[in-house]
Image (cartoon, rainbow, N blue to C red; front, top):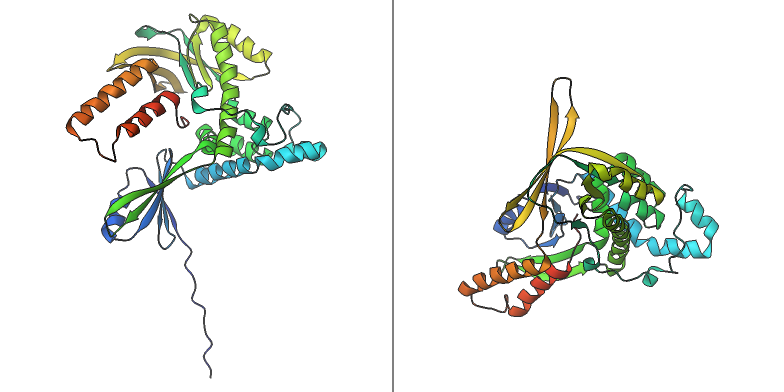
Length: 354
């Protein structure tokens, strides 16, 4: 009886998730096999020759979170098609938008190339008023409800399905990282077993989606900065992304300002705020109630750094580099031009804070 040929079953490449502290790179180098790396703020992706991938996550992101973040980025890549639909067939666009309660921004151009160009340095993700060291007991946190997420839907950057999934199934950090991925800069590397070196092979950045994110962020910045300035230096301590920390007697005024613009907020009572000096910068420790039980209360601490003025930061960096270069000769890998670029990045910003 003739033998029938059987097809060899192909093994599907595996994806393995690990923490940032994983020693997988050292392991692969010992095996002497080439591999590629793609590094962003949140993840390191290592791709082997056989297609297997290791994903090292800085924020312990789950597969569910990683898939959601990719979906948000794909929505951003399709954004130009949504705008074209909006202009060519408004009825279908409003059906796609599927959320009558949210106003559609009608001031946008025919395509994303018509968006204003926004740089990272044009956005204040956080601002501080001058505050003395000490412990404060009259601080309240006012959060803008889903500020970035609502703005992304309003502008048509994400679909209603992604918007609803983000609110119902995902954490706030997943939503922020998802939108931040539109501005991601990916550094690419290749390990070469012959030399034992990891070589930088290029940088991947989508200026198209990057500018989408910065336009979202700039609108949120304009909103919160305006209220921050209107409230006055004695009433507001600082804001961080979409949370504003103010004195108790300023809460009603600030909430009214948000409400006048149709923005929903929620408040959190802060148990205490400790401002102290550590090294060259001030630190802030926020103590707030996490969970109340019948016989005890769980508290949670959050820490923030108050950066020194930009002139001071540049001065510190120049000192740091001069100390380093005193013992290390300037080489093609560490030229003065490279140092200047690093200082310039510190001054103007290069990426998003989440």
